Amino acid sequence: MTELARTNRSRVKRLPKRGGYDFETVAAILDAGFLCHVGYVIEGDPYVTPTSYWREGDHVYWHGSSVSRMLGTLETGTQACLTVAHIDGLVLARSGFHHSINYRSVMLFGRAHVVDPLHRPAAGVEPAVFREDPDAFHSPVGDPEEDDHVVRPLELDRA
Image (cartoon, rainbow, N blue to C red):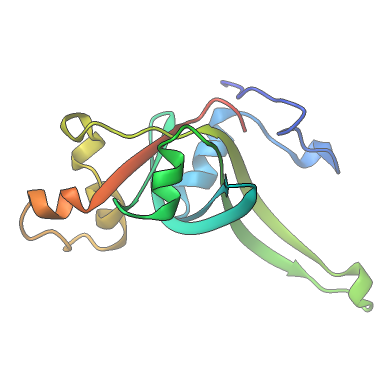
């Protein structure tokens, strides 16, 4: 099993036995979802943007409009944080103070970069859309559509 790097920033601090850093666990959580939240900072203010994503190998990809604030900011090399969470169950107790949620989550840190259109994985956004709707592409994505979208990857090396 390949372990992803742990840092003081990424290490689970409360109930650390519940944390897992092996690639297979992280990949399974990522592969089970399609909505992530990408965090970044613009001029000292934090932002978090929900978007669809997909994983190919040791990279997580997401796309958006080529004129979006998020993608424009990440293009400058700003640090990013990508999170995915799945609720597995609610734990209800007599007292609301003892309620809890069973969940699986991944938090990734790094810098995103632009994917060269000629080297986009599996034709850019198609893997994400095919996951949600296998009949979505009756014809290949055209150049004007690709010009409107930018694909960003984040390497899975720290979780």
